[in-house]
Length: 213
Ligand code: BG6
Ligand code: MG
Image (cartoon, rainbow, N blue to C red):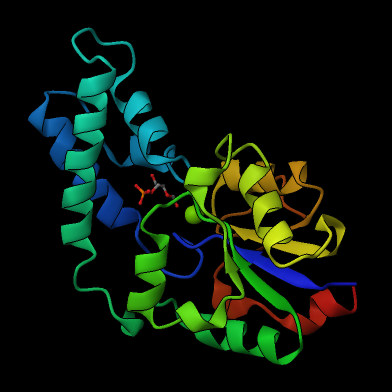
């Protein structure tokens, strides 16, 4: 039985990867650290400070205060990137998936690592379709730990075994599985090999296939 669907946001409902890339690239260039699209791929699902730590690595001269400052600078540039987001930036079919699931009586929750998620939900015009948005600042460990998915399930009062988690990142699928939920990958089966099922895009989601499962 399925009682709740817990969605990731970035890369599942909207495409923010390029916006994150441009902001990180700008930051990396400003401190003379190499960064490319391949490196950006590895940051999907990883929280802001974790991403910065991966970009800088153990290079000398970046203490905790400086890293916090750089993370804030990057976020300012990221906010510039998403300033113009509107409902037109939802992936095709995303709104219909949320509406159909709500109509079927399922709880809908968000488990995004992004502290900008509530803002994006508003800009995308889908905030009111969510029963709960888990706060990444309030969980002990980020993805691939299960914490944020478990927090989202708790917020809608549904047992993990009755939840379907939807993710585009390898770290996110690992988190869903560790939470004891069924997992749906969005993207490439090669990258998301651990997911129970993989579809190319959210628009290909068919609720009936999961309700009868
Ligand atoms: C995830 C993205 O959803 O959120 C990551 O996949 C990003 O790329 C992370 O680093 C944190 O986002 P933010 O908006 O809090 O910096
Ligand atoms: Mg994602």
